Length: 267
Image 1 (tube, rainbow, N blue to C red):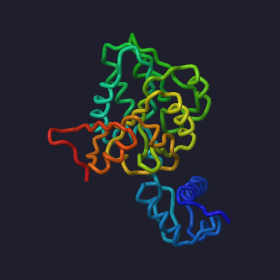
Image 2 (image 1 turned 90 degrees about the vertical axis):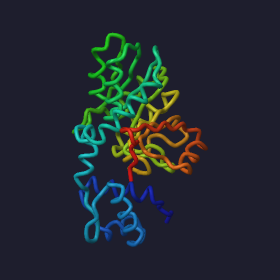
Image 3 (image 1 turned 180 degrees about the vertical axis):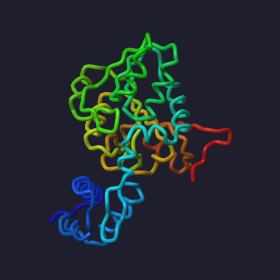
């Protein structure tokens, strides 16, 4: 039987968890045809990434998945960092551009900053809150992508909005993610939201990732932008010289923001 690599195994594990809310190592071993020791290693790593909770003999789907995808929870988390990232992101926007904002809470902070600026823009977004935030601006035209409204969120998902993207010339896409790593690029929880975000990335000339320190070196289930599709990262994470060099080798510009006078330096 063909070897099942770690990312595939972990996706299969999450699929099972979404179906049944719990899994056992024994069941997974029989189904995926890999050793129980390998699966225990997978589950430990996935617990570290906040995807599940280990139990005796298996794992369960935990509330953090709901809270990660619940917009009001995400919006409150790391708010100072998101505001600082949004203020830096605005500096990259020029009058007359067409920009894309995803449905993330960080992109919503960017929309709030743009709302108070005398600027003429077209903004395409998959975020309902983001669209409403900019709707009253006299010189911003808002295009809301079509799709299925995600439960517990204010975002649209699915492929219904993809056709609109073929008709619009997007200068910059501003997106956040559940995680970013050199191996997987930008990743997210929802496979369905990822489908739309992939199309958004492909339709944009430049992709700018808005990532607070909790997102760096973290992987989620599905990738929507590979490392070579990302042009700029704006973060409050204090990036080491070695890590910065690796990003530079991928032609990624890194803009580091500070949230206080001393600079934010997460452990």
